[in-house]
Structures are given as C-alpha cells and as structure tokens.
Amino acid sequence: MSNATNINTFSLTPGIALGEPFDYLTSLGMKQWSESTKKLGDELFTGGINSLRMFLERLETRVEVSGRKSLCKVYGKSLFTEYGIIFVEECKDNAKKYFAQDKQGNIKTSRDVQLSQWMIVCIKQ
Image (cartoon, rainbow, N blue to C red):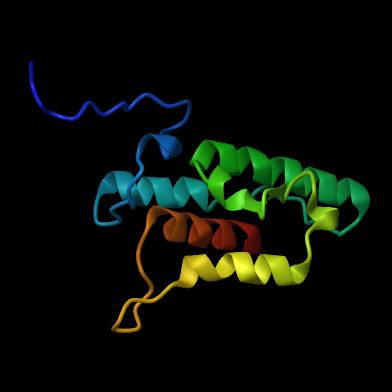
C-alpha cells in the first residue's frame, strides 16, 4: 500500500475541486477567471426589492458554481439570506482577513483572497 495522500478531486463544480490558489499562468486558471468574473446579467440592478432579489439569486448561483461559498458568511450570517442583520462594521472587519500582508507588505496569496477578488470584479460589472 502506498503512503501517498489520497486526494479527492470529486466536486459538484470545478471551482470547488481545488483547495489551493489558481495558477493564472495556465489556460485553466485563465478560463476559471473569465467564467467567474462574467457579468451576472444584462439587466441593471435598480436597487428595488425585486431587483435586489434577482441580484442576490444570480450572485448566489455564481458563488456556488465558482466555489466561493466560504466568502459569503460574515460571523456566521449569510450575505444572501441575512443581509439585513449584518452591520457594515462586521463586513469591514471580516474583509480584513483577505488583505493580510506578509513582512514585505505584499498581500498573502490564498485561494480565498483570489475568490474575493473574483467576486469584487463580478459584482462591479
């Protein structure tokens, strides 16, 4: 019997299969970036309740497919279903972990840091 670690590469979506940062120097890494940061839709979100509901549903689907579910909880509260009870200060405090720096002042690279950047780009489009 081999001492090699068994790696379970089965996942419901490709974005969940890897637990490490994506390599953007590869074709696969660039495809993952392109698909994950696509616009959520052609309709503009007006801020009305129906528009907000549509935006959250589309974003939640993108999050699940891209493997970003870990980013969508703030102190255990879901950004999609409990957004009304999450304070801005909690969001800011929670976001700090994605911008931790090393001794040289560079942002420490992790998969969650990459995924948070994907979500920012996706939302801004």
